[in-house]
Length: 174
View 1 (cartoon, rainbow, N blue to C red):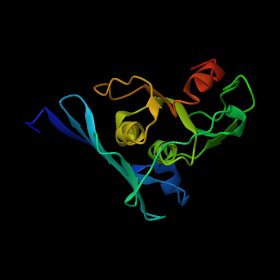
View 2: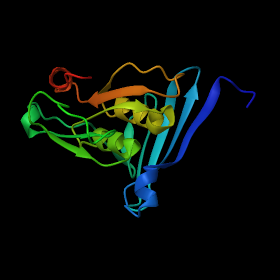
View 3: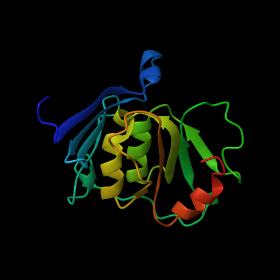
């Protein structure tokens, strides 16, 4: 690709392990990085026929309906997603409800749509999360600072502004 200012970031099967084991929770993830910024993204779940997408300054959508992050204020009423090593101890300080679904892209799309209230994970690849970055931002969410030129070992924390600080305080090893 000679156009270094515009790069497609594609994950043809985010949730590969789920896919290989017949677990129907995986997605196709596509993002466009233009001038060192993610400007559009699409996450498609072919099993549920659900499409999440966003374009910079134009909002985030789920199957052509505008979406926004959740509005919950208290962590104990929230549902969070994470991934990574299931053997990790002491993920949070308090007992909050956490799901491990196996698809970073769908987890981020679900935060944008208000299905999950937040998402956090370490050691991700840029292709796992690129589309989710713009979708969460355009849905009114907050995501930590991410170097989109780094391909591996990326840490993500995303949520609504209402619970972001509370979530950060609840993750002692993050």
